[in-house]
Amino acid sequence: MDADHIRQVYERYPELFSKGDTDAVVELYADDATIEDPIGSELRVGKEGVRAFYESTMGGAVMKRTGAVRIAGLEAACPFVCLIGPEGPDQKALDIISTMVFDESGKIKQMRAYWSFDAMRSANE
Image (cartoon, rainbow, N blue to C red; front, side, top):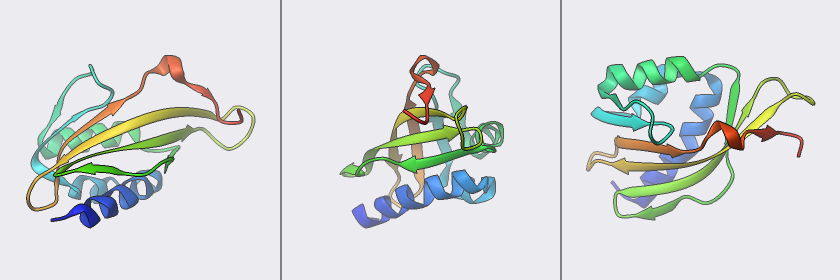
């Protein structure tokens, strides 16, 4: 497991999220993974918690990387924008910073996301 693998996960993650491919996203995670998205929300634990989180958040949203992946050892951070709703004047955008910790096998062990609804903006700005 190396930095290239982490970059590949960060390439696939928004693509799979945007397609609504829950099974493929869950497969990126370790069996004992945790998700805290956004920071301060309920901690989701294990594959069941990961699946429940993505089943409740996928659908109708498109996620795109907006900057480079920053890697330090088995940890990484990256900025994303999540576009919510159909393209047009009512589409919303939410800027997110995602951090992930990987295990030695290359699976995501922890994902945390920094964002809040008060930062929601028009996608057309």
